[in-house]
Length: 421
Figure (cartoon, rainbow, N blue to C red):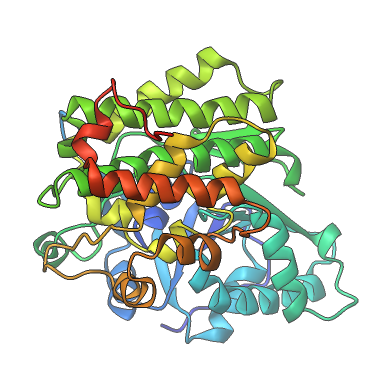
């Protein structure tokens, strides 16, 4: 596509890297409905071509009553068309990314080139970048990566606002038949609130419905990671071990023992957050949030799968992620963590497949490399150290032993403790 070269900044233009599920169903939807032109930058040519052909797409809201929302005033640019991408960035009212940690390696150098052009043309027009990624410490990471692609003199702190977010919207993997029916349609739940860092904006915060700016963004990122992501993970990993034939998250949560255990695990994580952020959250607030999440997790119309929620083990068991991250925090604060550790041990045995009966390639490699060796996973993947985290290694070994001897069904029984001495 050959775009016209635009000289001036368009304050009502959002440029977003990533025309995937979150990009289209969440960020694109919010800004389009807020009166913005939405320009998607992506590597997938058929999606870009279709966006330019139609100029709109549908978001299918999956709930008791299905709703179709048509998102208008959209177009796309392929990442190969660097000159046009750079121009779009240099003239954007606001920027966003929704490409995942691996995709940022492609996006950030292009963003840097766009920032350089913008600075040359409009030195007093800083650019805010909404980082719509499930990434802890996203702002620090983004700034460090930008520095690698920008000259040392570039005034990043003054000219670039890197806006951390908490992405709470659930968007399931779509079946092949649904994608073949319409390459642009995307399924999503009704939830549509974007929590973002109020203090990081260089420009006025866009006045569009659905944005929820917060002063203490760190606390809200941790709430998403250590309650939402952790609860989802607990459902997938315990649910799979309970019955490998389960397909959907709601199937696992229909088992009262699993539902109760997941809720108790989320409450254990909530206790960590209450201790760390006593001025940001209340016990009542977090309990209500947990019960709302469990209700949303059980949305049958959404059709969210155990495979989607649990796959990508190396990332989801990483040192700063939902399980290992909350475990480390609990250990540092001398707070209980045995239920969270139990979920992590269950995760080491996760082998769920997609609709074609295939495991994620990375999870196949994970299985080959570690063969369920809990001690090695704790060290090499989760980042625990045997000398410093002896108790975690010892208790993980006990959980593994009890799973073999007693089985999951027995342990989930309320009368049975997670860890027996």
